[in-house]
Length: 290
Ligand code: ZN
Image (tube, rainbow, N blue to C red):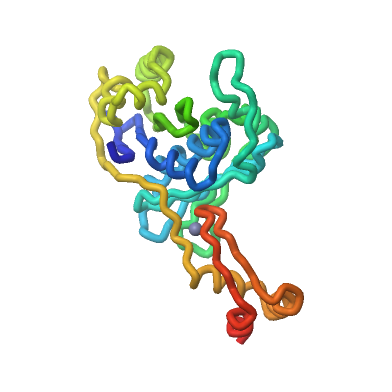
C-alpha cells in the first residue's frame, strides 16, 4: 500500500481529522540515515506528524517545518513537508539507542528528552515565516505536539503517532492521526471521542493489521457522520540540488569563500536530509567567488 494522508471534517463542522499511513516513507528515512530502532521511531513520528500538518498548506511553495530539540542524546529532530506530499527529515545523532521501556515500547522520550522545545514553522511565502513554540512535555512527540496546539494555537487536539520497528530493524508499520475540536463542538461529542480513543488499538498496530486510513477512520468515527475532503499520497523526497548548494556557498560571502579556498582548497557539502555529497574543487569555488 502506498503512503497517504486523508483529511476531513464531521458533518456538523466541529471536528477535523487527519489520518496518515506512512510505513514506506519512514522506512526510506531509516535506510537513508541508518537510524537505530529508537531513533527510527522518533524520526518516524515527527515525519508522520509533518505529513499531516503539511496537508494544511495551500500553495505549492509553502513549507512546514517541525523541529524538536530536547535535552536527550538524539539531539534535534527536524522534518520538512510541503503541500505536494513530499516530506524529509533528519536527527542529529541517528545511532543513539536505549533499552526498551518496561512496557516493551521503544524509549523515544528517553532519547529525545523531556526538557526542550518544539517549534512549528510555516513558510507561506510571506516576508516572515509563522513560527510557534512550546515546551516539550514528555519527548514522546505526540503529547508534545498536542501541548503545542493547545498552548500555542489554542486548538484542542488529540494526536497519535506510531512506528513499529521489526526485529531486523526495518520499519514494519507507521502512521498517525490528528483530531481537532473546533468551536461549537458539543460536550457529548467530546465525551464520545474520548471514550473511543481510550479503547482504540495503538496506531502502529492498526496499520500493521493492514487497515487503510479510511478503515481507521471508521474505527474512530464509526458513530459519526464524516466526510473525507482530501486524499494525498506522501513520500520521502529531498529537493536539494547542485544549484541550491552553490547558492548556499555564495551566501557565505566572499571573505568566507576566500578562506575556504585558501585553507582547504576544496569543499564538500553534505545534505542533512538525504546525505547526498556535493563536491567543489578549487576551480569551482573560484568560479563561485566571481
Ligand atoms: Zn538532499
